[in-house]
Structure formats: structure tokens, C-alpha cells
Image (tube, rainbow, N blue to C red):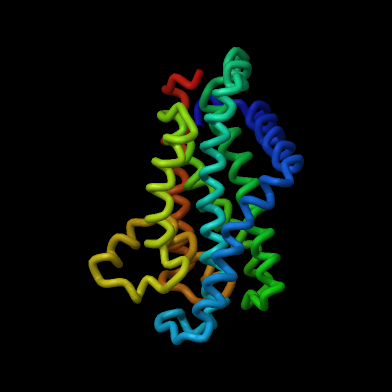
Length: 255
């Protein structure tokens, strides 16, 4: 992107890493809800016949979906941090520096995407204690790539919303109104093939569908689409939302 300042992006990324490392409560809280979903759905549905799960057990099917959900929920923290910094004056301090707003926005996206990926890896590690096993340990590396793309997609979307909303309550209401339909229409918790045909077409327009399908392809070897198609689609969404979020931040009244 023209005019980006790589040292500024790095400094903002480093700040986010330090904030995340020092906030133990944030680490626990961001893992608690996905873990409850994982345990609750697994214990609730593991004994039921689940058609369309690609020939794998329900735990194997569920874990990539919950990892994708973790990336989705991390987006809300990325947007809230923008509002938080605006409220407490940090944005005013960095905006008086000779750093363009696009670089500031990209630094926030890179930092939040990294912390989201860390959360996804932690949840994946926890799932091993429940009996989850990837079909190949080499699949963990491309899975990390899909995590980063999912995180960038929805953190870019969160930045887009945060650039237009000035308070926590409004942001949470609006963003949660978007997040939960995306989650339930992604096939994270149950197979997309079980949906009625009309609703199934909505899932094909959902970027989270392709991110989770890509995670399943590389972790458990079961997917609706070829992994390359999943990668290209979610990568395209990530690029579009990050660019849109960065330029919305550049043109907004963030102070």
C-alpha cells in the first residue's frame, strides 16, 4: 500500500504483543467461550448420527470450526481496542506523529491478527487433551496460514466498524449482530450440507465458511471445496476487508 511506514507498523504490532502478554485475564476470557462451545457441543452431539461430516468423528469435525470461531470473536477485541484507545487518548498521541493513518491501521490489524492466531493455536493445543488429532502434523503449518487469513478478514471488518462507531455499547451491538449469523452460517458447528438449499447459498457468500473448510481440509482431511479454492477465497476476503478497514480508518474522525 502506498505510503505505508513499516517501522511504525512494527512498533504498533509490538505494543499489541506486550499488551496481550501482560493481560492474563484477556487470554483466559478469549479462550473460555470457544472452549465451552467445544465441550458443550461435543458432549451434546457426539453420540448422535451426524450426516455429512465427511466421514470423520464429530470431535474431528468440530475442532476446526471452533478454531475458526475463535478467530471470528478475536475480531471484536481488535475493534474494541480502537475505541478504547480513542476514548483514553492514545490515538490522539500517535496521530500527532509523522505516521500516516493507513500505517497505524495496518499496525493494529497485524497485531490483532497475531494475537488471534495465538488464541487459535492455544485452543488447538487444548483440543488435543480431549482426543483431537490432526490427520498429519504437517497440516498444522497451513492451518496457521488459514488462521491468519481468517483473523485478518474479520479484524479488518472490525476496524471498518470501529472507524464509524464511537462507543463500546454500539460497537458490541452492531458487531455481534454480524458475528453470530456469520458463525451459524459457516458450518462451524454442523455440516453445511444439512442446511436447506436456499440457506446453503448464503453460506457460500460467507468468508468464514471457506476459512473453516480450509482448516478442516488441512487438519482432518475432510472438506467441501479444494483447499486451494478455500485459500484463494478467504485470502481475497482478507485483502478486501483489510484495505477497506484501513481506508475507513484513514478517512474517519478517530479523535
